Image (cartoon, rainbow, N blue to C red; front, top):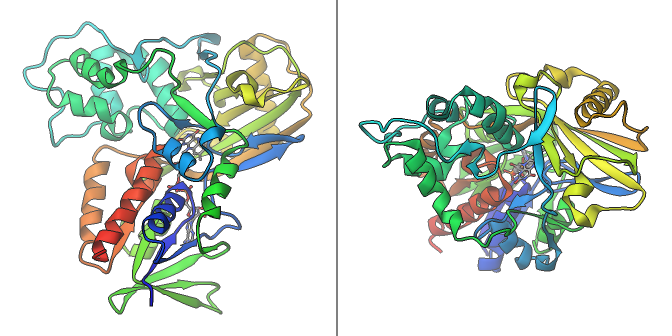
Length: 438
Ligand SMILES: Cc1cc2nc3c(=O)[nH]c(=O)nc-3n(C[C@H](O)[C@H](O)[C@H](O)COP(=O)(O)OP(=O)(O)OC[C@H]3O[C@@H](n4cnc5c(N)ncnc54)[C@H](O)[C@@H]3O)c2cc1C
């Protein structure tokens, strides 16, 4: 009988893991399970007033070799990868939109007045928050106005709580052997210096993220949705998974398992503590009749502005393939880690807030009446990697070496972005194949 590998969780990490397993070893019985009625996890394209709208992730990093582009090509979507128009992004400071500074790393100016320290600014075994590394060397304003809003766009997190090793890995690595932040920044940005000027940094899929999910899913031999894995136990040198309702449990045996689910279900299934908090967010999309919007891809709103919205994207300014003559779409994001009470509001209240705050910031009395709106709530959406995250995950993975073959993958462990999740899934696939002695 062929060996069976079960991938639990059909988000992009689980999809990438299953795709890699099936591609490398078509003889294996690869089964992907997801509790929802469709795979994709945080990748999900909906529709509003006949227009596609991303309910979750919108784009992926493509600077340098990109796991997302590779995977898109592997599933026949190489030609569907599109790039932003190059419209600028702004940041709201004291109620006024201004250009985001260029020539920075995540909003950190590459040069600054600072004295060289006696030793490298980050010990090899140390991890600190982004704020702890940057505030003393570039000042609070840089962190509050630029670094935190940019990080917030990715993590909905706070600069003073996020691990610099997770959020800015190239900078953290460079900081291990430089005594000034400027020298570390120079090294961290050098790898992108050879890139062609104007080369795109982001990509998306024409047709939406669900098209990406569907294309990956179509390559897989056995995908079972509406299947929640409730228990996992070692059995005959492999694993026994229990699924289905408590009164009518089903079991599925596997020689190896890849767990590609968020930290809470992973901890429950593994019966191990995984110390990781998540931020919840909501996205509010408005379809408006064609109206004059600023010529920006969008703008960020620092927490210091005291508003509900955290960021706004003008979809058809940012993406040429989304432009339509009669309508325009904007999408606002709400919710920061540790300050999620805004999310208690009703959909209608959130929509009204977005309308009022966006109108005020772009300098109009009111936005035109929307043709449709959607509120997409993501509870426990974005992992908040506290300093020391990598060491904790290393320890977790080491503790799983003594069990039957298993690997963990996804945003809970290796980074929040789509390419990082794809790489995490592929690495997990390679790890279980190695443990199966293949
Ligand atoms: C609103 C939003 C916008 C984002 N925007 C971007 C962006 O533009 N670019 C970017 O790169 N990243 C973005 N991200 C981050 C990125 O989308 C996620 O980090 C990534 O998709 C997570 O993938 P994953 O496979 O690790 O987990 P998930 O997508 O969370 O998938 C986990 C899957 O496991 C399933 N599951 C959970 N428990 C069980 C169980 N017990 N049994 C069976 N199945 C189970 C779930 O149903 C889910 O499908 C965004 C995230 C959010 C929430």
